[in-house]
Length: 312
Image (tube, rainbow, N blue to C red; front, side):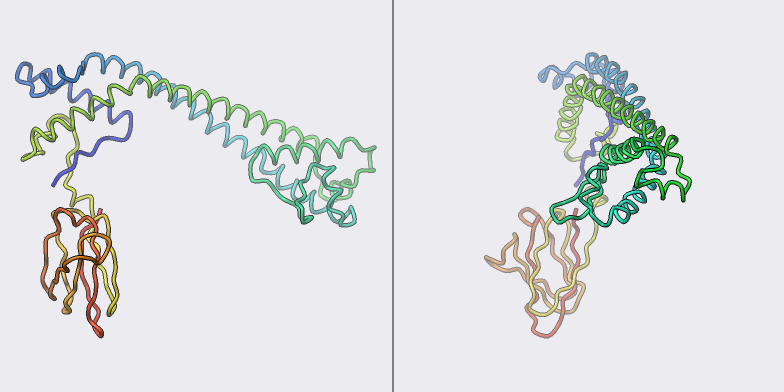
């Protein structure tokens, strides 16, 4: 059993469209998809044209996304020393204000209903706190700020830290702006690419049905045909005496193999109802239609059972 693995990326889908167009052109009147495309109203030339326009938006999307990511990196690098000092300032103020955490709200610090300091995880909220502390400190007459002893002892350059905070906010704004532009380009690309993408899937489904007995031929059109078994895994299970287990996602056409010496019992479906199937130790049984989920039981009172199935 095979599966047509559709490409996830826009670039991969564009490559597929070009491969289909090339194959269709080369086969000319003998192309097996010509009549089907006519029936479905598929025009490859239009799809390719829209794909080229969509590619322009994709290039811009990548550019804006890159600028957004770079701005975020710059923001984080610039803001890190500011936030480190902010946390130290808050802890010092808590002590210097006599432990009265409510007074910290005047410095932009958030206090919950239990009287505990809460520290935000997002950048904007953190930048606001840092900015408020710097501004509040600067509003005091020189040498009278409750924060002054810490600043003096640690040599904090408040002007430089304030500038860094402002710069980090600007970088964050740029990141957001570039992110919005990237999203706009993504939306424009998706709109142009919606029909070509749909057509690619339709043609792929048609070819898989047309060449049902030899799906490898579909690969000649650029599709990636893989065996379901190759993308699945063999799952080894053990059941202790009298226990039951339900297994789902089983690949149809594969086998349940009893690799132990004790008989096991299984039912098709997720419930142990109906006529049970017995697989003796060392034997195997095919799992076909209706066996995508099975319920396996160990009827033994003393021995464990070991078995394998192939799941997705």
